[in-house]
Image: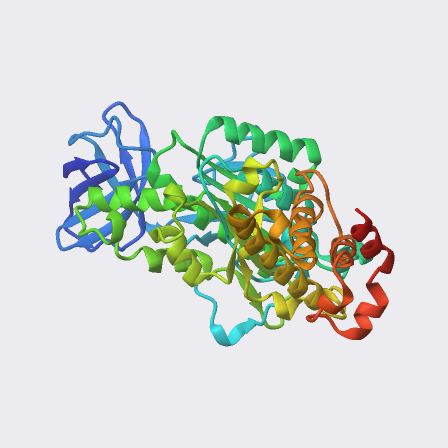
Length: 471
């Protein structure tokens, strides 16, 4: 192993060094500072005679007298089932005071793309216990469904609720028998504050969710470069648990905006020509490399489902980060500032939210036969109620017909009964659909044109409509 003392320039998180041999892209580097500290880095660019190294621990203390060693291998994640219940930093080192990790093997963190032909189509329901998701924008095993939030909204509380409550319903029935597959959560936090990290850990420990979780923590004061590695470590761990050990893994990545800011910072240090709003032109490709690691494989028991969380800068859903994420993923859950200001928890706005795989993961044998019809009818009725709210602001409530008033009342009741459930309530799918029928029963039967007649006969409650009229 050759050692060089040929550092020519230090720029932000990057170190440039001259070399006289071919160095591979993504190769891991050790840099020893004059006072004996060793920092790890990764080759970001390699051309004849010069390499650019991104340093994970930051470039503080490195100068032109520092020595550089090239290890001849890419970054690897030590994987083992014993990672469950552990807390690691953004570089994959334990920070929970537990024993050292003894890996079954070490896996390259870049990972290989899943061959489209080898993919199994996602069509099995995952129950999050949240009506706004389960009832209207159902999460399916193997899907990637991001949460679009904004600064100050309680997306962390929603992430914790999903991590705590998410189950695969048939697992509940069979209680993970010997032949069954178990459920695990891989939680990757990027650029979060120490306060947020403490909240996450307190919740994980209080609820016992940590036992089935692997947590990666990259804090706001950790180097930005480490942020680009954290999700790859998390996904490599998830792939091992899912495809080698048969777990159904839910990967929650927060906050993807911090990850993209790190890409922009590194791009600026490399003096790259910027793309839209200063982000690198390859950001779409980079995000796709992460998101496309979700899915199921034919003939393999396990699966990876992804919920990336991103805060939209300036509440702008046309910003490059949510815009590109929306292209790659299969829908989005939208959090809403107006609903949050009304005190709704979680403040999920179901109208602009979407789960593109929902239709394949619901219905008889998966959730319930009436699920699709109930969801469509709730959506239509709530949308009409929202439109009428705008009209009321102009003409007043007295100018509306009896039918319109029912839809206005429906919209209010939908938000208070269906959406607003708090961050500690766990509703199974039957309870969610029954609440849906309670709401639909406040409308006349003749208005229910998106549900089959036999389902209306079975679930519609006549007395609820009468009570609504009297009220």
